[in-house]
Length: 146
Image (cartoon, rainbow, N blue to C red; front, side):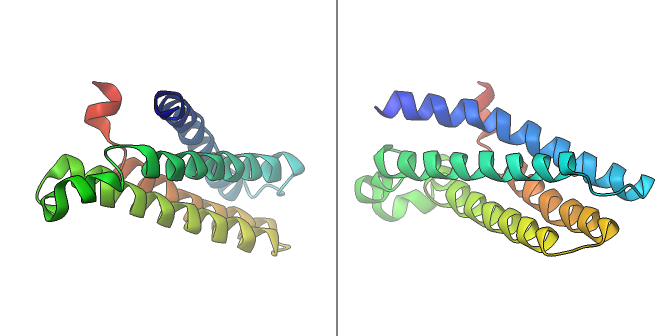
C-alpha cells in the first residue's frame, strides 16, 4: 500500500504543478489583457483546486503510513529536528503544503464571490501564485529528481 500511495502522490504532484502554473499564468494574462473571466478560467482554477486537494489527501495518508512521516518522531525523537531530510518530510513539507492548500482554497473562495473580472484575475494571481511558490519551496527535490 505504501509504495502505491507514494507513487500516486508523486504522479499527482506533476499534475498539481502544471495546473497551478497554468492557472497563475492564465490569471496574469487575463489581468494584462483585461479579459472577461470566462467559464474556461473558472474551470481551470477549479481543476487546480481539486488536484491540490487530492494531492493533500494522498499526502496526509502517506504522512501517517510512511517511515518518514509521523513515525519518524517515534523512531528518532528530537533527532528529527536535527536531521535536514527527516525534518523536511516530518515537519516542513507537510506544514507548508497544508498552508499552500489553505491559501489556494481561500483564493478560490474569494474569486468565486467576486463579480468583476479584473478582481477575480488579481485574486487568482496572488493566492494561486503564493501557493505555487510555497509548493515549489518544499518539494523534496533531491528525492524527487534523484
